[in-house]
Amino acid sequence: MLVVYGALGAAYLLFTIGWVLAVTRGGISLPNPFFDFMFRLGGWLAIVAPAAWFGLTFLLTRARLGRRGVAVRLLWLAIGLLLVAPWPFIMGGNA
Image (cartoon, rainbow, N blue to C red; front, side, top):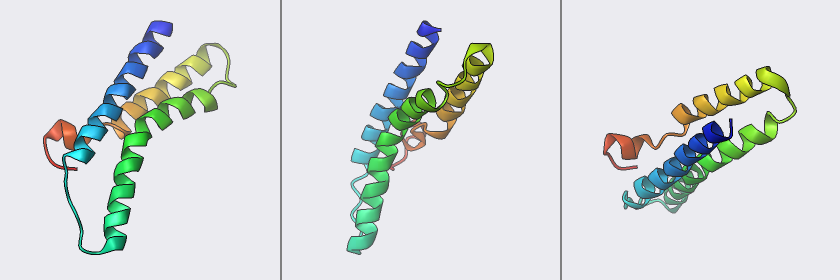
């Protein structure tokens, strides 16, 4: 299981790097300061999301022991791989 967790952790680390690349290459500046702030905040939250999902999954599923607990943890990590993937970077568009 340690190897599986390591591989998943590496994937989440690559997702964080992908979000950094997707957000920094956007270069969008909005005329309204509030909208510009919210856009930049969303970019930073997207960068933090993979690491937060990985860490919180371990934190919130640690109380469950046994095979069922491991299966639940792996299920949530697999769901996270789809939800926090850097889709703008994967698809080649801007953030």
